[in-house]
Length: 114
Image (cartoon, rainbow, N blue to C red; front, side):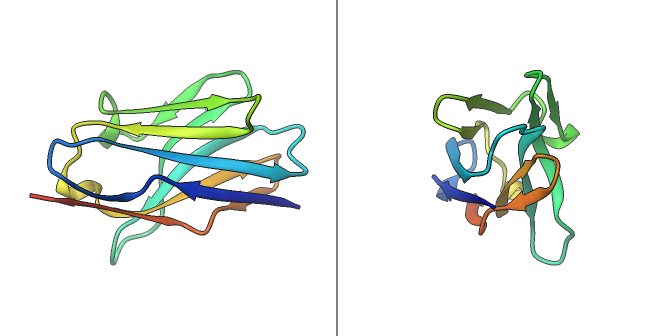
């Protein structure tokens, strides 16, 4: 069993920055990837960014150049640095871990206002 605990969400104005953190605990060996998804009201949950065990990364087109995902393996934590935030980034952000079974965090709200 894996537990994911997210932190760092909140409210920010357009152009601002936030950093989300997700700490993993439990049976976290053989982690294939960790990442962040988001779900805006009325929309489906969608990938934001993912980092693989090879340290390769993948980003949604809408966040490329603005968001950076990175992980601290010693702390079993993945981070999402979000710069130049836009109102359309407003959503609940979910941490995801795959080993390869998928685990999800409880979700954390990010609100960007103009």
